[in-house]
Every structure is written in structure tokens, then in C-alpha cells.
Length: 377
Image 1 (cartoon, one colour):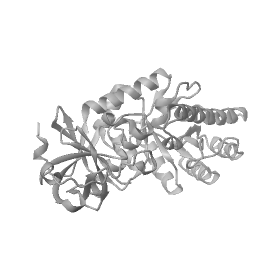
Image 2 (cartoon, one colour; image 1 turned 30 degrees about the vertical axis):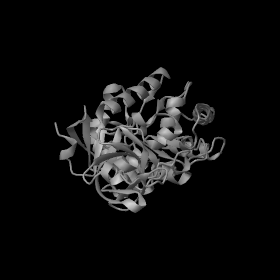
Image 3 (cartoon, helix red, strand yellow; image 1 turned 45 degrees about the vertical axis):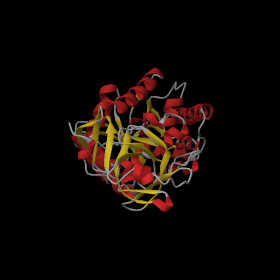
Image 4 (cartoon, helix red, strand yellow; image 1 turned 90 degrees about the vertical axis):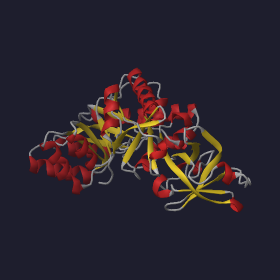
């Protein structure tokens, strides 16, 4: 075991027990809804984390890059969904993964991309299972329900032996903050893909997979009849954005950044720490929520919240911790002298984790392991 004070800062901490509770919560929810859980592993990009999710009952995984697919296929994962619309220059890579035994599926939302898949499949002599991305909430990409484009894409893929189903991500759920609104969004997400699946089937096209998912809708859904799988990712760690939405509390956040006090600006009420936006990321996802958390909420080294403090601003390697109310207590330097360790909870777990190459795994207040993670494409 390693004491926190022996770590160089900034360091990415992962509370193993907290993560385990989060994993069990989502698995139980999806099991109760009668679906398969296909967690989005872009959040962790770490094999030990994925192993914990699989051990709890996750059936397969979702990735956001082909690098993730490569990394986890090398660890033994076969059933993988690459859930970003496939660029034509990646089709060959996707087919190569399949040729090596990876049961990779991809997504498209345009006829052009579908034709690129069809052309490559014809040349390679092997199918590439492809789902049509559905825009269920106007948030991002995808085909809107009722758009004739759905059948056109479906026909191109079916002719190539590659039509595998439909999928959607209700990213608009991140803008909500009441149980009623989240339940309504989960129903909207479900209804959009079910309508599109029905349209494909009515046209004589297969639609074996009906995939939905975001952490807020997955935890808020009450009925997913007709849906085959649920994808969610950030639930494994949670973060301040999820707390602001209302699907977790700050005590459920398993990830934090350990930082050291390196100086003060007493006249400004500033505590200077060595975790800037390079350690926390520039994600300010809570800025549009009821409580703006700046670059992160501050805790003591033992994880106890210090609710009067926040990281209100940051430079590349300097974080500025101050009183939330803007006051400048004269005893601040004495309360937090140089060398004091603090922990900062992230706005967006995926973005903060991406700034680091490993998780320092916490158990009982001590570091018990180091789990590597990777980044890039």
C-alpha cells in the first residue's frame, strides 16, 4: 500500500469501492429492464475497469475509437460496437479487425457512408455489421424518425449483407435535471428507435439490434420493451455534471484529482495548486447547470467535501482554489499551507481521465494499485 502523501501531484485517483457500487447500480437497473448492458468504455480506457464491468454482468462493450477496439480486442473482447459514425477512411481498418476475429459492428447515418461500407464489403468478401444511427432528440447526429433517408440507408446496407439494426444516444438528457424530464427523455429515446426499427421491418428489411443509451436515460428508464441493449459510460465513475443532472450525488463520484497547495495570493483569497486545466481538462459542463462548479469541486485529502471552496479558474499547470462566495478569509493560508493535499472532483470524468495515463486506485484511504489507461486514436 502507498500513502497519498508519497504521490507526486497531480495524480488521478480512483475509489475502487465507489466504482464497484456504481457498476452494480447500473447493471441491476439494466437487468431489471430486461436488456443487455453494453458499457461505453471510452470513459475509462482501462482494462481493469472493463474487467470489473464484465464481471458484474456486462455482455459486451462500446467504443468511441478504433484504437479502443484494438486495445480491448487484444485483451480478449470480441463483441464491440464502434459508436461513432464511420468515416470512409476507417472502413478498411474495421474490416481488418473483423478479419482477425473481432465481432466489430459500426454505425452510419448517411447514404454516402453506407455506400462506402457496401463497396468495401464487396471488395473484401465479408460483411461489416452496421447500425443506422437515429437522432432521437435533435442533439447531435443521426437520421430523424420518419425521414425517408432511413430506408435508403437500410436498403444499401441490406444489399451488402450488413444491415444490423438501429441505435441512438439521447445526449439531450444532459440538459435536464428533474426525474420527470429524464423519464420522458428515456421514453422518447426508446420510442424513436422502436419507430425506426418498425419502419425498417415494414419495408422488409432486418433490424435485429435496437440499441439505446446515455447514463441519465439508462438510469431513468422504466420500460425498454423492444430494446435489445443499453449503452452507458460515465456511470462507472460519475462526475459533477451527472450530479447536477440529479442521477448521482457527489459522494458517488469515484474519480478525483489529487493536487498540492503550492502557494497563495492572500489579497485575492486564492490558494494556488498544481492541478490546472491540463490535469482537470477545460470541460466546463456545469457552467450551464444550476450550480457552476468551475473546474471542479474541492475536497480534503481524505475525500471529505469542502463545500465552501471550488476551483474557480485555472491555467495550464496552476489551479486557483478560492471561496465560492468570493470572500478572502485572512486565515486561508494558515488553514491550507503549502504542501497541503486536496482532491478535486471533475466536471466530466471522461475528459479529466483523458489527461492522465493511469489511475491510482484507492481502497481504505491508501493506494493499493495502479491501473494504466490509454488515450488517442
